[in-house]
Length: 362
Ligand code: GDD
Ligand code: MN
Image 1 (tube, rainbow, N blue to C red):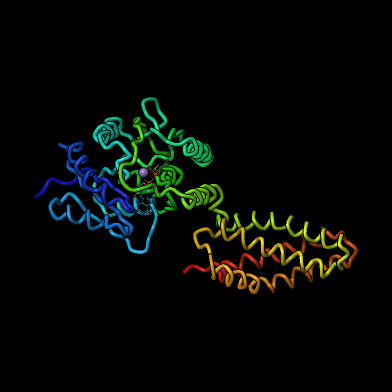
Image 2 (cartoon, rainbow, N blue to C red):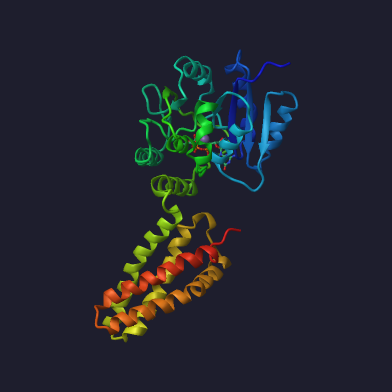
């Protein structure tokens, strides 16, 4: 029988075809003397990353591939890679050579000797660094790191790191609680674990990318925001509802401003309230489309049909809105109080219907 595999190296990839072979060559050198396997988790990259992995796997049984169809996501890729392996020790490393694979043996040794749950490759401890990042990227990395402190139970210096090595027994209790959203698998893990994780950091310097390009974009930033909200309040209310509520809150001011202007122009209250509701609805739609439902964003023709369906779905809400507001206004209450009550009734309708119809999952 073959020697059992001790360390599984999970490598999420999207369009990294040119990096596969160089990375494996480096892993072979770095992991000499360790019984290891490499598991690539590729999201059906159009550049043929999966074929590149298979070609090598034909020659080397330590190399495996999970090819996911119509799926995207760094975190979920890592999770599935971990779950596909039986190894007691699991490393996660980027597939683009930006992480220093030479640290893996030291990380494994440290994990075992110090009986830790996880050893994190860190750019923000002495000896580590981010290399030649732009000021903008440094800035956003710092902000994201600060935000992470709110949801973390541990004093991690680099919670954004995508480079770490952990014990399977530390991963298993958290796996069902992970949001699996976006890029921040490590943060997700630390925020989701039922019992605090014992950990240590080893410094590394983030290398420059040689082939391909970064996939960290505004969508990744959005997913990060959703992860933060989810970890803060997700147990009570869905994070999407929170965003919808915030957008709606801003919409109330849009509504009040429009209503105030219309009344100032001498338009009768019921008509003014209707116009204000329409304006607020349109702006709420546009803002929700880029923030709340960024992952299901409607564009082009769909934007228009989506807007129409939003109007339609909310028309009941709008009728209730105007009716409630008019009723209260007729009781001689202040115009803004009447408007607020109407808008609130409308908002409840908006959320319920729009998430079912306008931005339904495809
Ligand atoms: N399967 C899969 N699916 N893999 C993905 C996806 C995806 O949707 N998106 C990115 N990857 C892979 C890339 O192919 C690469 O191997 C690795 O995940 C990291 O992605 P990059 O796009 O190179 O990220 P980066 O270098 O900009 O970001 C790095 O720094 C971040 C913190 O600043 C990464 O190390 C991140 O993990 C880290 O959070
Ligand atoms: Mn990268």
